[in-house]
Image (cartoon, rainbow, N blue to C red; front, side, top):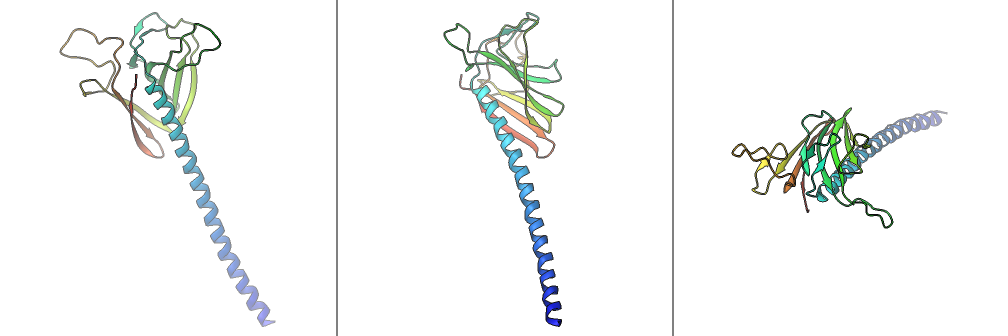
Length: 196
């Protein structure tokens, strides 16, 4: 009888230790899966933005009010949209004469990185904006632009203080630096090179 009690006690101790180890493994597995999903989402976002930047095209547009806008521009007057530009590579169907160019933009809304897409370049008041959520838990989004003289600018087109002539509407940067501040991972920077 004493041997049975001792063996049950030992079995109980081993069971408690095994359960604690299993719980630790399950918690670690769940944390790893969460981090991997976050990393995967961040990588997909960066690949999408990279594809958009690499397809930059020097085609200015007219916005929905008929105002001419540059091929790429920082959007200071819209709290949700930070940057927009013309890109190529859009799909055309059958034998249509439709352009493969489109307008895309990025900004933050409700702590989410948002991608805007306009199916036409020269917009009308009823042009529909396609909105996609790209990444969540985003607190800030900033861009910097490298010009052909290898100078960095905080807005595009750059403001030339030495000239009264506005920048060409077809002017595109050589590179775009994007900084995203994530609530869980802090600041992430990425440099994109245009290949237009």
